Image (cartoon, rainbow, N blue to C red; front, side, top):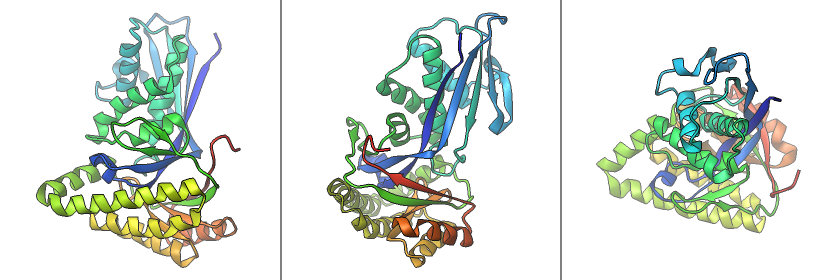
Amino acid sequence: MPAISASAPGKIILFGEHAVVYGHPAIAAPVTQVKAKAIVTANPMAPPGYVRIQAPNIGLETDVNELPADHPLAITMGEVVRFLGVRHIPACTIRITSSIPVAAGLGSGAAVSVALIRAVSAFLGKPLDDESVSSLAFQVEKTYHGTPSGIDNTVITYGQPIYFVRGQPVVRLPVSEPFIVVIGDTGVSCPTSVTVGDVAQAWRTDPERIDQEFEQIARITDAARQVIERGKTEQLGPLMVTNHQHLQKLGVSSPELDRLVEAAQRAGALGAKLSGGGRGGNMIALVEWDRAQAIAEALTMAGAVRTIITEIKPQGRR
């Protein structure tokens, strides 16, 4: 039997982070320059149920049954087996690799889950549709992010820009004209669960103030949706700047993120903001194509440990 493989891209949130956890809209897009990949190879010499996991990026090689019950790979495997009603997985080796930085706001955990779910279900002869893949990946996300919105697993599963509201059907966002985003990584890791938890505590302490910030972010997100659909993407810049200011008021920015946002704007970006959970991870800058490399270099000079230039494209355009 030939090896079965599946991959999943990274992601960025363009608008709406944190507010999305509380039922407000967000806009996200895949980042195909980085990805997670899972390869399943049959091992007919081993007994049924023997599953060897190899994850060289994190220095892991073990029998899946030896993983702690709360390990994300163990949870993902358990979710697939439960959903498909499989009693024993045929003996196999699963190799998982990823070029997505961990705890950096690019959806590394969700991408690994999506790739693994797709590869294992296909290996079992029961490939899953996107809705099922996203649902299973969301169950894994809940273990690590406490109260995730579901946006990471959704945009990564569907692999195209989306307008997302928690608990509502996925809306694929029509991109009328492509636009360029430079991603700058602070190199500071901060789990999403930490910032989501801190915002939740702030909301419990002062719900009126935090709700006002969420409502402002929601208005910005809806304005951004209209701009993207009309192809007036240069108008996204000021919206990014304002969105970042509200995220600062929520307490989820950091000196490192603010420094990169400011550096991008000084270098000629049309707008910039943090992307994801905050307190580290990534920021994004809207740029004109002929300025992309110069702005990426400016971010590196300002302390970014890596940069990615990505194009947000209309569906189906290569």
